[in-house]
Length: 246
Image (cartoon, rainbow, N blue to C red; front, top):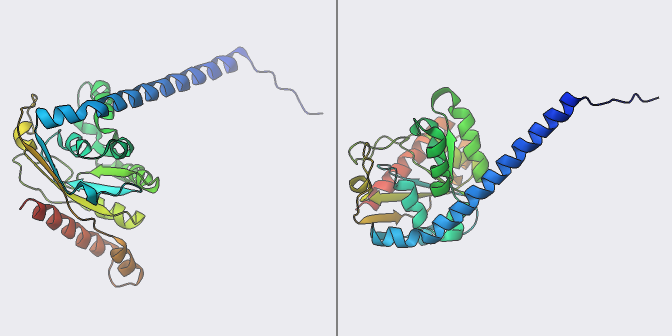
């Protein structure tokens, strides 16, 4: 005979707490998505009046599928500017990689605002970076766009910093194309350490997509080591971003 298990009050209470937590999380996610849709429907007026946004080459971003959107990084306005340059449907599908330590004090409030404005996906620096890289890889394998700033931090003076291997690693591992982007004017509008955004002209230039499959084939054929391929693709990405500035 199969024994009958009788759940106690503690089991029911635990199940109720789990159910309530899940319901609250789902409600919170729905609220954020609704806020994102509302924000994205009004962004055109803000970006084209207050910041006089100029866009070039946006048709280089594929309408479907995964893509890495990689730009120089000088301001907290960088990701919102890229998203404002994309069609609404594409922008709403896009996530933005953001280092968790950027939020500092009032982390919950800042993270919520960042989720609404850029659909941020927080990752840890240092020892936990591998786990964060897998989270970013998941976005690309879901065939969604991902904004990633390959320098890893904002430039203090507007000049481009050393580009790290993260974007190249993601592109080669997932076969995702990289669209290089150059941003100008945002350092003057909201530089690192500033808190009040200033009006001014902003330009977002999208370059032609870089296909990582040639690098993947070279690795498979034993022509280059993975680290060499990452460096070669990283160099190409950096030069592509710089060329867009001229």
